[in-house]
Length: 137
Picture 1 (cartoon, rainbow, N blue to C red):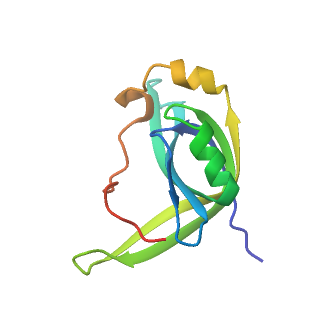
Picture 2 (picture 1 turned 90 degrees about the horizontal axis):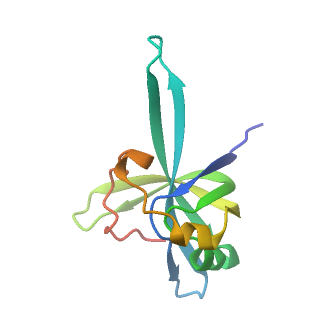
Picture 3 (picture 1 turned 45 degrees about the vertical axis):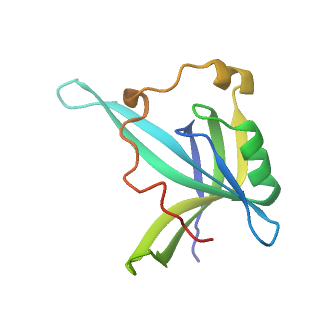
């Protein structure tokens, strides 16, 4: 038996990007940050932020594109998936992402629109990938 299930609560690090494929199906991509806080052995506060690449499909993708924005908090469930492709230079590239089958919008849309833009210390460093690189679906 095996299980591939992910559940996270975090905040969007960017506005979602929705594309419509030639088949007519919608796909939505965005990043979510989750943070962990603790006190180290010396009593100093520590924090670590993880960035997660999220993909949703179909009606869920359309709703995410319509109602989500940078800074908005979400609860999502899905599975981990790793894909590979060749870039323009012929090098093999890999990405691991969460394919979300359930996304619950937390807080209000009005709240996220009026919230100050998250600063670099709010989520930690951005993930190290080239967001302008075209990833095939």
